[in-house]
Length: 437
Image 1 (cartoon, rainbow, N blue to C red):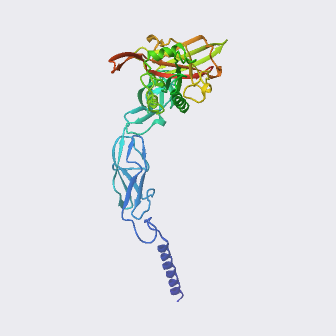
Image 2 (image 1 turned 90 degrees about the vertical axis):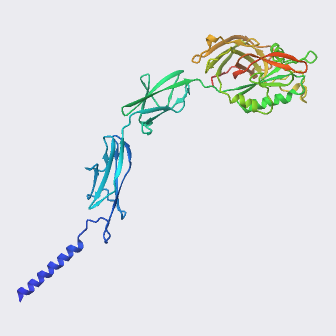
Image 3 (image 1 turned 45 degrees about the vertical axis):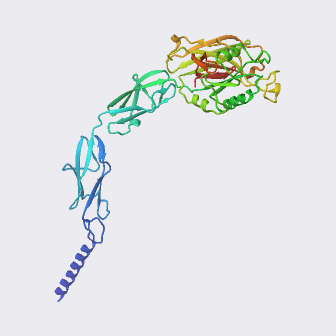
């Protein structure tokens, strides 16, 4: 009896232990406990088109939403050969990738591996202005932007990106990336701001002239690239004390038929003030040259250095004009058309012309797209009728010369009138300097 009870006791322990093992065991199904098992898996990659030497990471997700990419039960094959995840492709071509998980097989994905055969070097701007940033852009043959990983050289010297060229001309830039190179030529030029000169033919005898002067003053005050100069011309019966030989000569020479007449950058464009259409049209043009001025007074004598930089060499004769103007002038001669009488303030009165009245020719041999034309005017005498030295300015401009025919149909008369267009203009206050801009 004792033996029988002992066998029953041992059998109970064995059954209990077996049930415990079954209830505490785990399944290969990593979808979690409960019952449902995955029936399919989906393979994807973080890139399907790469270059040689690039790495691709794969991802496997079952139809229950579980990511089993890193499971020990998941394997990957590239063109039938078991590989790691991630995997680096070292040869070009098309590669089929399949994953398996337990007894499930994924879809097939194709990885296209290409060789970067060459580079393309481009410029953010070409031509580029001297002493301003030039930016470079580099792309591989697959269109990838590799600028930040590229190096750049000019004449064998490594340069930064962006880079400032300090001299004019054409430069070959070489870009290097991952053993590949690309070259391109950038043109370094001068870029100048186009400016406008409003030339006002006026006189103290002229009752219609104050509105024109006010329009010129408004345009000048409203735009730093617009300058004004007033050419005073009088009559024997009503002389203008601000007239100088040049202004009286020009009124006839350029066939000024009425006062006031305001020209924009030369007598070919008459300003329909106060509308700014003609002024804005001039400012919108591309400047073919620029001017820099440096002025000083010593011993009562004026010295002016003029620099003219040409973007391109003009195909015609051009001349340099140099003016001395005085702002805020009053005179004993009352201004007709104004209630202010002799208290009327005249703006930017032309006091002196330091070049020939028709301009000084700039020798064609002195004009270059790479070298500035420089001329220094020394020991210039200041006129005796200046009211206030603090109001003096120097104006310089470059112009051409041509002849324009006017027809008087009533009298059947044809008049040839010399004209000019102003290439560009610059102004500076006395004793100051201004660089190219």
